[in-house]
Length: 252
Image (cartoon, rainbow, N blue to C red; front, side):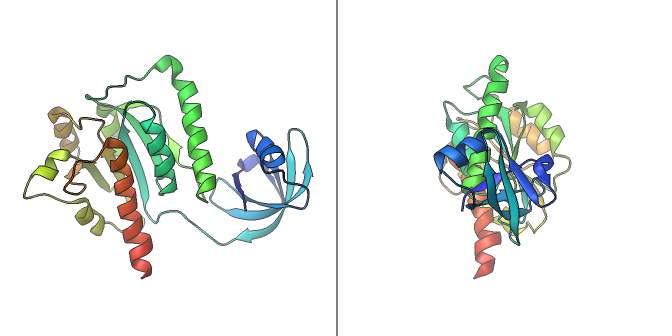
């Protein structure tokens, strides 16, 4: 059953009104008809099976048939701060990171980022990124859409980390030492409800100055396995590890 995220103001008593691009998707792409059912998600995370009652040009009207007692969200709140990578790699991280349960994303302008953010095109890019995240949330049956913040320099990023009780950064130098903290060790110390902030460097990793700044603000360097991962792989490794530990391992 197809899932759609509907703004809070479109929930009126037992009715849910679909607007925007989703109208075209429902009426033209999947060719739904009155009587068909879809899943609607409220911004607070609640979800309901809704029956379509009317399909108009700009709106689709539905009525709530059944509230769903479900949640596919990670039991931890995980923010991925991703150093700006080349080409469309950030889009890959946003899409797959959403599927794996990230709660928020922050693109980071790092010392070794080859890409320099074009502020004149920033709104267009952010609209595209939000669309990618929304569609990935619907595809993976998330209860909430992850947020994405504007591109942030590292010096400002660390100021945004004060509300997190677990702060980590993937540091390739840790993969080269005999004494290190693995990401698995860090995950084993986490618990449900923790707010986790993970910083991933761009191609080339973090500069020594950036690593020093992160350590000064209580970020712990961790190793993501014995191999050096591509920047677009690192965040997915971290999220998959957390998911396995808290959602799969504990179910066995």
